[in-house]
Image (tube, rainbow, N blue to C red):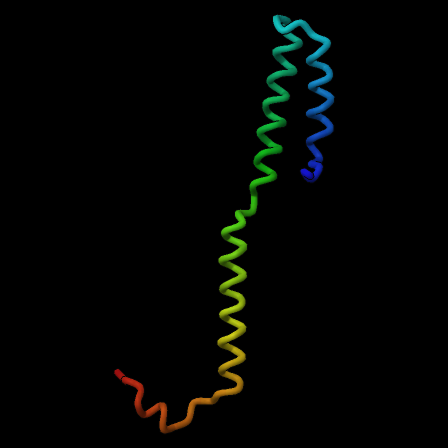
Length: 87
């Protein structure tokens, strides 16, 4: 089931209005142009957040929490630090 958008109701009203006009009248053309703009806006508002980006951000968050938790429980000792390469 699709979630209702705030633009769905005006789109439905314009569709009803279009059924009353002859396709060759200026009113029909004006309403059709308005309908096209509303549909374009509705589609843009639905695709603002990319699901792949949500997965990426969530993964980075989990990794960050894991690293912080590991560092809190496992402290580097002075012997281990001597093995690090220094410049």
